[in-house]
Image 1 (tube, rainbow, N blue to C red):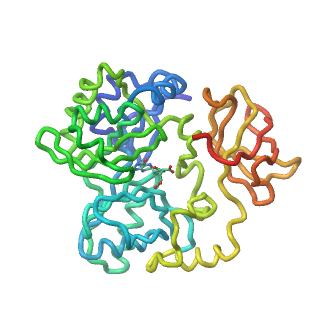
Image 2: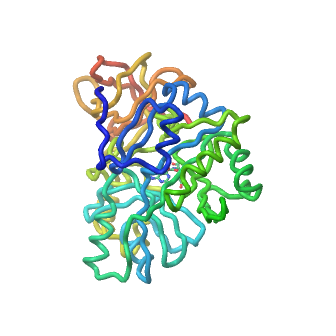
Image 3: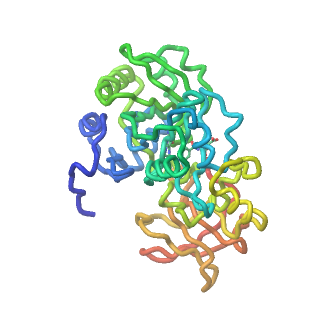
Length: 367
Ligand code: THG
């Protein structure tokens, strides 16, 4: 594919200088911001992620900050997940739905205080929806996109690297909890989370000016750990079944179709804007759902459009993310499959631009 032309509309990040110095070779666009996709090769990056530790510029996971007396009320309006038990210091993976129950985004929400929240968004313009809801319901909140840029530290050696920069206390941080830690006199929110199954942290860097000093400190502290610049890995995230909004689901899908029913408490999520619609559809249950799909292939083209999943001549679903897995052998994929064919073991055919392949519905994702 031809190069993407840089311009002001395609936002750089506080870490772009470090990403370029590290030799980035591929970018995508996410929330109108640069997101690296490849450094050495997707395969080499994959093996390194599983063996060592990587620093990821995920500044494109923008924060929608909601502040004020009605903040908790507004956040609950966005999601069918019941937030009443959520405490400051916790992060939740949170489906966001519209009035039809359609997915608008699948962010991580960070509860900083009763009256201050960050919504760490996937690739859709959620800020506009949240501002619209706040205005339309005359809520007493301020909604904006602060100068906060997540930097992820991912991989099995993440704890060791983070302890060297932030102190040993960080080792005690639990999954999807956050704390405040000091770097050069600046308080930073750090959570144990991230878009991989290899373990690690996300540092919510407040103030772009401290971005490169932090990047450089992590790189220097991890030299003997073989720390490298990395990015969300297209193979590893499919093996782990981590969904990508806009790829694996859109506003045409309910959270239940996306397999996110475990993050919904629609009966008790009072105030959720899509609640009535979801209660209606949840009576019957979804008629299609996300499934892991194994593909009998040695190479696959980039999945830049849905690939039909066929049972004979009948289309029964589609694959929206796929890769060849070095560790599991053959193709791994995320698909949306009709109820009649979603049982594990169901044999299917996958139609790609490079031809047709045997495929099979799997019981669970690979990681
Ligand atoms: N971290 C932060 N913001 C994000 C992402 C992230 N915003 C964009 C995008 N990623 C949102 N999508 C996801 C998808 C999956 C997860 C997080 C965000 C995730 N899922 C775990 C899983 O499925 O195993 C854990 C979910 C749980 O148990 O709560 O982490 O990565 N800040």
